[in-house]
Length: 190
Ligand code: URA
Image 1 (cartoon, protein in one colour):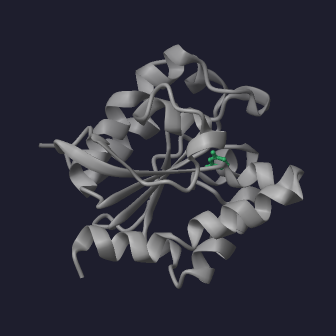
Image 2 (image 1 turned 120 degrees about the vertical axis):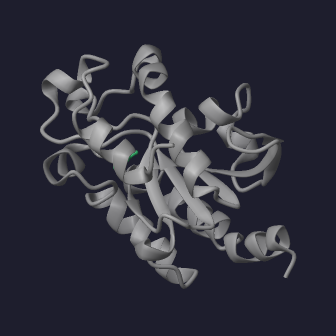
């Protein structure tokens, strides 16, 4: 059985799709390997590509700020993306890129065994909860057939980057995020 370190090593050397040709660094993920909460974004941006760490740019700063409001630090959660290499010019990841990268994410979920999977943005949500509209389901917990266990709890949120372009999403995202502690204690039955 692979460990998360094995998977990260494989990701750093991955050549499965064309994103490998343009990346500076692949970005496997960051945080607590036994986290209860797994955050899944879309794909690395410019700063993430340079540093090899997810969510370290402007959207990441906002994510850190929202985590701090619910008394969580990055080291308490695990953060990764549906594609591990930067799409050039920050374009949307293509379906085939997401599919090529999917086995990595699947293994990460299986090893971390999070109690709650928070998807950030519609791309991450679509992969786990196909057919839903983010404008209708953001901030609502969904129990759904999971990738690592029979049923898993998903919590779709808007992507933090949208809040940087449109201030009204900032409050929506923060309000949704504030539901996490209670949701987590309900899942854990405490
Ligand atoms: N946006 C993402 O979706 N992921 C990152 O790692 C950074 C920005």
